[in-house]
Each structure stands twice: as C-alpha cells, then as structure tokens.
Length: 416
Ligand code: EPZ
Image (tube, rainbow, N blue to C red; front, top):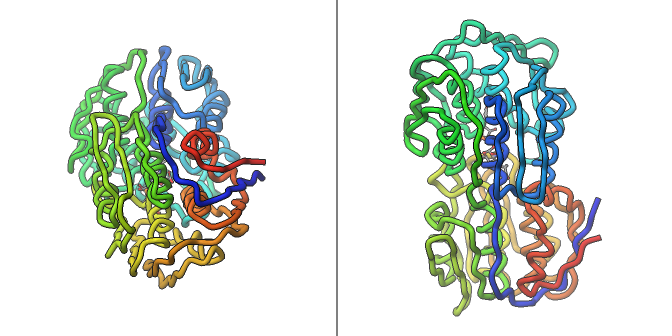
C-alpha cells in the first residue's frame, strides 16, 4: 500500500501529456475478443486496470503483449467462455467482456462483479439489455450463464444510459446478423471511440454519441491498429491541480470539446482557459470564487469522474459551492478526508455544501477510491505543510506516472 508525500504551496507550471483514456482502452480491449486476427492498440495508458485486463484475456486463451504504451492482442485462440471469478470480483470492468464473449462463443459465463468503494455497481441494465437480443440469461449462485445460440438483432431499450451496458450490448450486436438499434444509450466520448475502433476493424456501427446507436451485423472483423483517445478525466484532474496552486498548465493530447462542462465550471470559479486543437491551457489571474452548483449527470452533463477533483478545488474557492452527485450513491468519501485538511464541508445524502477556506493544511489522509484519491493529491498540492496520501494503489488504477507528471510541473511529491 503506497503513500504519496506532498509538500504543498508550489505553483504548477508547464505542459503535460495526458495519455490514452482508461475508460476507452478497457472496452476496446474487450472488443478485441470479437476479432480472430492481430490488433495493435497505440496510446494505451500503463495502468493497473489495463494489466489486470490483459491477464484476464490471457486466461481466456488470447495472446496479449504490452510494450510501453502499445498493446498487441490476438484473440484467434480464444478457448474459454467463462470469465474467471477472481477477475470479476477484482475489477468491475471485466463484465464489459461479456458481450464480446457471447458474440464469439455463443455461450458464456460470468460472475456478478462485487460492489466497489463508490457504490453497489449492479449489472441489471447489462443483463436486461442483452436479454432483449433474445439471449437466455440464468443466474445460479452468483454465476451468470448466457446462452446466445438464438440471439437476434432488434431494438434494445436501456432504462438508463449506462456506459457499461451500452458497450456490452454494442459488442454483442457487432457480429449478429441484421440491424440492432440501441435506444437511450450512454453518449460518453469513450463510446464514440469504441465505435470508431470497431469500424476500423470492419464493423458497421453508427450513432455513438447520439440518442440511438445503429449496428448492422457483419460476419467477421479483420485486424488492424488503432490509437486510443486522450483521457479527458486525467486532463481535468491536472487542470484542477493547476487551479488550486494558482499555476499555469497546458494539458496536451486531449480534445477540448470533450471537457466542455468541466471547462465551464473552471471558468466560473475564476480560471482563465485557452483551448487549442488537442490541448487546453489553464491559468489563474484572480482570486478563486465559489461554483454555484455542480450536478453530475450522464454525458454531456458534468462527469461524475471529475466530481471529487472539483470538490477539492471548491474547498479553496471563496464563498459557498454546492455539488450534487446524481450518478453514484456513495461518491463523497473524500469529503471526510478533506475535512482533516481544514476543509469546511457539509454532506447531506447526494449534496455537498463546501465553504471555501483561504488555504488547506497538510495532514495524513486515506485514498478510498480512484478519483477521491486524486482529489486528495490536489488538496495536498494546495495545502500549507506536508500531506501524506495513503493507499495510492487506488490512484494507480487510473493515473499513469501520476507523481512523475506532477513533479515535471514543479510539484513537490514523492511516493514510497
Ligand atoms: C463507467 O462505469 C466508467 N468506468 C466509470 O468510471 C464512470 O464513472 C461511469 O461509467 C459513469 O460515467 C469505465 O468505463 C471502466 P454506468 P459503469 O453503468 O459503466 C448504475 C472511473 O473513475 N447502474 O454508467 O459502471 C450504476 O450503479 C470509473 O474511471 C445500474 O444501476 O457506469 C451507477 O449508479 C468510476 N445498473 C449508474 O448506473 C447497471 O446495470 C452509472 O453506471 C449498470 C449501472
């Protein structure tokens, strides 16, 4: 269990490349199961979740080679159709494999993923979506047994625009003869990236990012190579870190349009933002003032994955900021840890009321989840004195070389 030690009050200055998106590469790796030829993925982030997904794929008989930020996958020898229990429990995103596995093997077994630090993380929408494609799904003792020998194309309606459920149904439909339309899908940019990846391998998918995704089934996919999109949440995290230190930072390798809702809130509290084709520059010339309200919602609403980081920023914005977390039921754990650093926070159910303080004070705090951990690092960069952030393994799940990148921007941070 690692620890970051941060000496705060250093202005961050300079440029940082954000790297490939965790929430794009994970479903795209799952989609590689649909193809029997070699696929090369570029701009992949070196993250714990990527390593765990690679070993899960090897356990199914796939050949997976990781070389820095490139992954070579060949699922030609896929010879198992059961997602091992230990992976399902260790990493929720392994359930994204189900759709591809069903499509390739017609029969597949998975286990219910455990809940995690931010909520129960049910998969009812995944299973309801797949069953609308005439896939027979039985649940026996924690096991999910899928029989897709009679699966059919058709209309799939999601009760809620779940990212994972959209991706699972999309991957199940790619090799299914006929036209499948997914209604009320998630519109996240990472799903557009998945669509673009699938089409680069010969699939016929359109509408990702809109209210309807249309899939025309094809017989086979061919191999190829694909560059993963930039990670908008990593980009937003570094922008929030620059803001709390009143620094001047440019994040590169990112499309600004995918961060519009975050940019709007950064500008609202007094940051100056300049956008370029594949970069965003933030500087702070005035005092930071409150953000009247942040309400998390499915894309293009404010992303729940940026809630914790903006929460930390609001702690040092003059005035009172309000945050509503409408996506996950338990995603304010960082509030109690920030209070240890002198933050003035009141949490009522899904609402956080944050009264800004001039500066936070260093303390020993515990990361409880991925984005909450990143928020504590952001707070430590602002704080007077030394902050230690424990349980850094949470943070390594989603941030490549996090401490190193902060150091290159002038932050004083070490890990042990
Ligand atoms: C994806 O998770 C992301 N993970 C999450 O990022 C992200 O927070 C989330 O989408 C929302 O944007 C990956 O892409 C690997 P959902 P996912 O299904 O697919 C409920 C991070 O920090 N729900 O859109 O699991 C669910 O409980 C991670 O990078 C059901 O009720 O999210 C939640 O309240 C955290 N039944 C809401 O929907 C279901 O079957 C949104 O979940 C599925 C979801």
